Image (cartoon, rainbow, N blue to C red; front, side, top):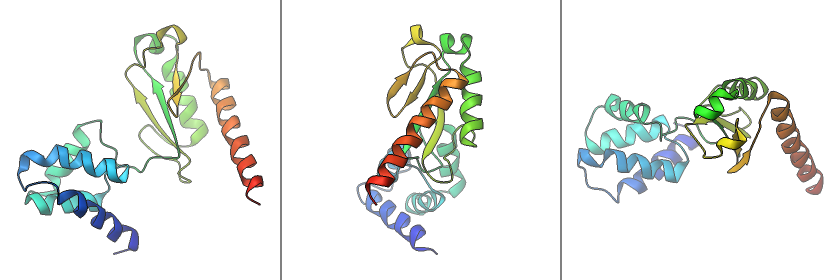
Length: 167
């Protein structure tokens, strides 16, 4: 077992100490594990299953059923593409495809450098700005594939600036 896997198991055990071993605590336990770790890794699911004395598959089934749970670690920057009715009609799926291509990941994944994670939301309440992308809780309205490039360029420039300042 790697150091990272052991650290995940230890953090999960800390969360488990706050709960009784009732199966009804499964969702609240998973919510707390995700709050602690940022996602729910396999090692955490195994610990939870052992704690509640239930099959690991039951834990995995709950994690994959509810879209509130993440199986991948979050990126430094969170990208959420709105696919509500207005955004859908104005090209939300085209914007989602642009993000996928530019980041080289699919929905629900994180870039290998852990810089960005990508997901969708049902609605962000900015319908007049459709299609909308939310990056780090900042709504970017009238998003187009070209705008996706601009957003990524601004993050790259900021990263480059930070790199120069630390040298």
